[in-house]
Image (cartoon, rainbow over the protein chains, first blue to last red):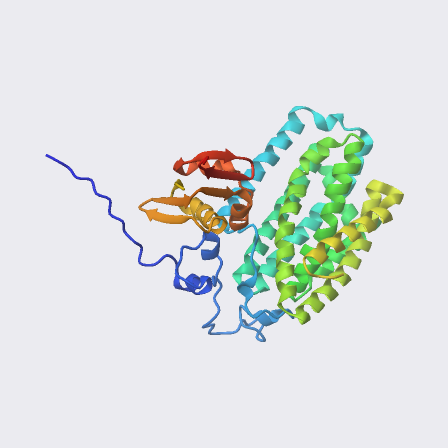
Length: 331
Length: 89
């Protein structure tokens, strides 16, 4: 018997969903990110307005003063959808786990000199409350923002903040004990150095405009805090005093900031590029929250760099301004 | 001048690679077959890391290409940033 093998090319009738094809301009294969983002949020047929906010629809673009002709103009340069996001973070979690393991098994924590250890605990542990604030704020942006392109990365960002808070807790438990965590909570609630920052975080909780909240939290606060604490203080100042182990434990935060910055910048650029009104509004918010963040962070920087805090924070503000200028926001 | 070619499996990962190749090589001709895409180009064909990275939104190691590579023809010139196929005339 003879068998003939024949290839049959089956052409798919369509390459992607109609709503995605409309955005791509033609029926061509779309990436998973595009399929998992475009027009995912319901935009019509809301029967009732929420009883807790009868002024707005449940998803309502008018909750923010920023006006966009199309809220799907935003694009996450990392192209995170659920799958890629969890894969990327799982990989980083493995690295972080290995780093913690390395520090623990080699007894690196015991080799830190007391001064570096005390400074790290005093500086890093209260920051877990800041990270928790970041979690809450990003969840709020996701809940009240409009369009999956804008809200989806916010909820990932919220989870990231929660992860950072947990890493900081583990740093505390590795270098000290539960008492250190309690002391840090005390410092956060009553310590002079932290009250400015606590006020900032608590004030941001009551912001109603999701894009203003985005500026206050992701642009201004994180944009100054992460390079200041993790890049300047932990990686440079503490490392030069023998605290390299700390840098190993906070490696995720440094990497995370470098990665998420791309999304924050791209979002600002799209919003500011939309219209002169948007740009003016973003510039006003950024300037206002940047100045507050800078003054709130100065006493925190003093914990590690003492009298040099003003100069160190000023340097960060300068770099922050250059960064934002590239994103199209002049501050 | 003769053709060089690159044959890749057709899947989610190679879609962006193929898109990057057609962007960088306007003279390349794409032949989709079942489960495979063959890209022919006269003279030479270049795969650029940067173009692929811009499309997939993450860093890309050109070596990842080999996971989905079925076959190719031409002399290979490979750096960290580019892979070029060409015939030495």
